[in-house]
Image 1: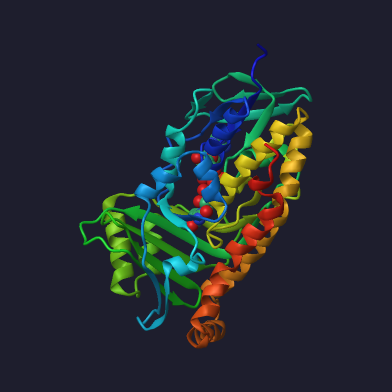
Image 2: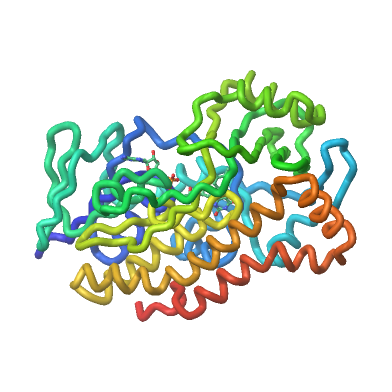
Length: 396
Ligand SMILES: Cc1cc2nc3c(=O)[nH]c(=O)nc-3n(C[C@H](O)[C@H](O)[C@H](O)COP(=O)(O)OP(=O)(O)OC[C@H]3O[C@@H](n4cnc5c(N)ncnc54)[C@H](O)[C@@H]3O)c2cc1C
């Protein structure tokens, strides 16, 4: 029997782990190279909704995720003085459609536990070079090993090293003027199902109460400094940022810091990359098209994209043709979602007092239905766009 084709996947995040699962379904094997010693612990709650739920269903993990997913009743948006601006039912925000708020690390852990036996994962490893040799790709690892693969998948996130190695253009990050921090922590408080947001010009703080008594804190703030790099200031920065906030926000920062949880803090950047593949190397997930946290659809699109990639690879032996077909199906939807991320950033984090005043007035005066419609627009845009090119249209 001929050897199965091999994909080397760089990055064991949502995109990389899902890609390994889908490749196995079409008779490929995969080696995943992850720089961290174990699965990244970047804890925050993220909502999965729209087409990715079908992908998760096909992968046989939707039900399991459903049992651990959070259930939020309301998102209440308040000014910094505590005045309630509006309150939306969480289910309305997703157009009454199925949605699953889950911790990112739970999703990654479940994807890892579902890795097929044809996949291997190497932690604490990095790639030092990638040479596309037309019929195969040669990958040098930092432990001296050399791999030969039929395909390389750069699923190494927003600051992709594969992208920098392969493409001449080195400035794919498009900073949207915001920084963010997010963390989960456990508390012994009464479990609740609510999310409260506090807004002021240039800042949004959100506290989610989780069903097991845990909490997630999100802080988003405007700051113009460049070039935007990863942030290492941790909770010290958050203490300064929230010093004059409501107790619930300051308590989240204090308890989060005391819990010793790991904090994700970075600049919010779109990844705008004119091409996602070159030869036998393709970018997947945030490495190709980070949507920022404002869109709330990045992980969902990474899952859908992994499924679509396997569909295209199953249709042809010409890897280049498959990669081009994958990109042409996905790109129109991604570009729309990226435009929407910018709009959402302006709505959620108005920069000036004037913009803040008009946004609040609008939110206050707008009929509830319009407000809900504005929230669900992106989700429907994603579904519409994928109707023509999404996984449901596959010939497989
Ligand atoms: C605060 C926040 C909230 C969010 N909310 C939502 C939401 O509600 N819904 C939603 O769908 N999405 C949401 N997202 C977006 C979502 O988290 C991302 O789009 C998704 O995790 C991207 O997955 P990925 O696998 O492409 O990249 P990542 O998850 O970033 O994984 C990349 C992996 O590659 C590894 N890696 C990096 N560099 C290298 C290297 N050189 N060599 C080897 N390995 C490497 C990393 O360690 C990591 O394991 C949110 C994001 C944030 C930050």
